[in-house]
Amino acid sequence: MVKAIYPGSFDPVTRGHLDLIQRALPLFDHLTVAVAINRQKSATFSPEDRVEMLRAVMPKDSRLSVTAFGGLVVDFCRDQGIGAILRGVRTVSDFEYEYQMALTNRHMRPEIETVFVMPSAEYSYVSSSLIKDIVRNGGDVEHFLPPTVESRLRERLRNQP
View 1 (cartoon, rainbow, N blue to C red):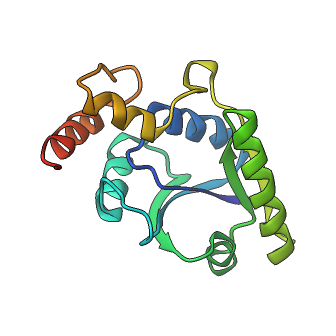
View 2 (cartoon, one colour):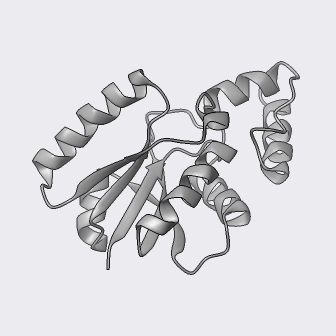
């Protein structure tokens, strides 16, 4: 059984993230979507909120689970018996960063493989940061976010200074 993890901030989850999850399902027996807890970053949503939003919008499939984790992803993989890390690559700059991370992870845990998957072209430029900027400036993000996530993001950003 090949178990994989798709780690990320998911702040918030986008249709691009969901596209990657759909693309990964045929590749693995089980996929854990894992919200990274990084106390050094200022997130828009708490890890609990991000897990909740993911559960609400992900496809209903017994091969999918959602959790939050802190620390190194390779240590989480070791502890959970996960053998692959799924990473989305949108641009050349994404690839450079992800390649460096994959090699570092391989050095620490050679038994864990990194699998790069490209998003659909319509989501190849979408990032959570970009979407938050659009929302802050009153723009339309319907194409980029599920409706429940969009309404939560608009509400959250409306209440931020």
